Image 1 (cartoon, rainbow, N blue to C red):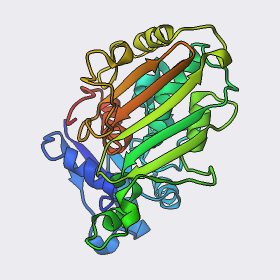
Image 2 (cartoon, helix red, strand yellow):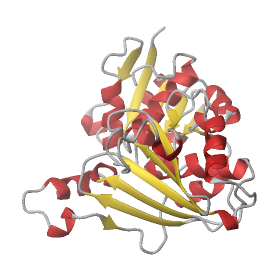
Image 3 (tube, rainbow, N blue to C red):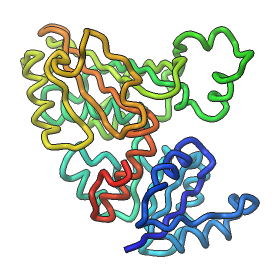
Length: 314
């Protein structure tokens, strides 16, 4: 069976990466819009309603406008923007979190895929809260580093310019006001009562990401060791194709005691590390901010919705 697919916003980083993943897909017919009409709502409505699947790779306001153009009850909208991630009428596109998440992706006509930082954060926090190890009111602090590809076209051009500012040579902390577009989903999807402190860094490499959460054992809702936490994560993600929990303290995965952020670039994989000691338990996710953190997750959700192998094209 052939499916018609439209990418609204194919010119952006996420849209281009989705398009690239379709290069060898014989089961897809890609609908294209003339460049001079890609912001024309009438023409976009034709494409969206002619499609079986439409990907929205747009700023939030534009994504809301495009979603509203869909009148075909059979068209599935997969939104890669922030616009619909905490809307209960939309499936949250992180199927590994639990059977209920996967089922909603399978059956919904509206799917919102997670943000990159949110993917790494929620992969840690959701199991901790669901298991009862972490209370909903725990004072969470999230530290994250990302390649500059996640910062958008303008930032990519700045990093790749020959006469760039010397400050771009080092990691740069941002979101200094503790206002970031991924924070609402981090809180709501994870089941927290309060938004976490969030410290993201954009760094001088192209793609790849780590997200780290540290836990004080004395503040947890249950008395656990670091190994207990590792065992809970192993059980939670058992059998998942794209989310894997590394051996305790990184055994079998880390050749030395470093966790580089870029080693899963161009994959849809995510690794979870549990390390530290029984007083201060550390958890880190490693993945591709353009893969499991963006385009890969969107394609995976489409595959699940189609009822085919979720790894097709990934």
